[in-house]
Image (cartoon, rainbow, N blue to C red; front, side, top):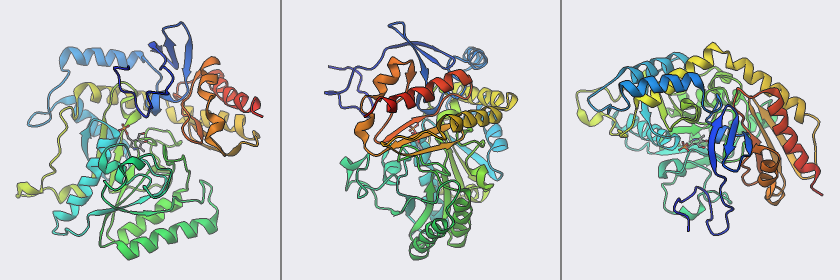
Length: 422
Ligand SMILES: Cc1ncc(COP(=O)(O)O)c(C=O)c1O
């Protein structure tokens, strides 16, 4: 019997996890001597690859000084510097940073902030959210409740059906990144109709901008976000961008919000924020949001405070990661990854494949039936690549430091898998 309870796993039927001994650059080194290219940056987090010497060095120095001090009543330079960095690089106007320990918790905080934003102004009716079908915001209760709804089967969290608060959902935008203009109009119209009908009950509209992640890798266009921003302002609904997966370059711009050049009221960062070293997240808000909490009445304060929020080691990693990202012009690296992904996949087809989507440093192959991908992980491992498909999606989100040769190896493994399918 396994002592570790593994994620998203049926222990009775799962294959034994591979034993990782160490990792360097884009490689995971297994204890049996094999080396695998980490084709998904260990769940989109290790954007610089593993064991980065500059981050390691900064971390060692920070450990010698201060590895943790609670932010309740105390503060420290790594967290202060990190808040300043985030405010500098995030869309203009996100001036306040609340740290927490994971993307899910970062989203919970965003939802709590949105509800309390209205309560602090005397409005208790706005306690629901509007979210997109095929969305994913994490595995905690609030985050699950705004993820793909339970009646849209199969939903990842079906088993909790009936236990979560009820919110409003509209179809995921279907117009694509380069939009079909008729479909764009339909998608915006659906958003408008829902806001028109229910804005009195809705605290915020939450979405993963440009690219929905684990709910199905749906890509949509900046114009939808621009329209969403205008509609939310018009109907007095806050706009929350969950950039846990899209943040730090994954869609080709530093943040997905940059594609549309807009600032949401609240934005959540995670995953790549701490470069694959440890879990941490940040929920940023604009000053108009923060100001409603700023009061003589203590009850208007945000009642949240994870033990490890703003942890000095996590903040040091984030600060160093941002410094590397900027000084080594990662946006150019991401552009070149995108170019290679296009070259490799542009003319690739197979009867089992229904779509291939590429955006920034992400490529997704969607197949008609999940059984097509049943043995692909084992095949990829046998060919030196670590991938983790789910449902009908086989994807790569490589570290931005990947060489063209290794990137081509990942693409070839994906393509070769289909070439041996009947
Ligand atoms: C868009 C998005 N939001 C939130 C989360 C949850 O983050 P975490 O796994 O760090 O709790 C994820 C994780 O995959 C995500 O992709």
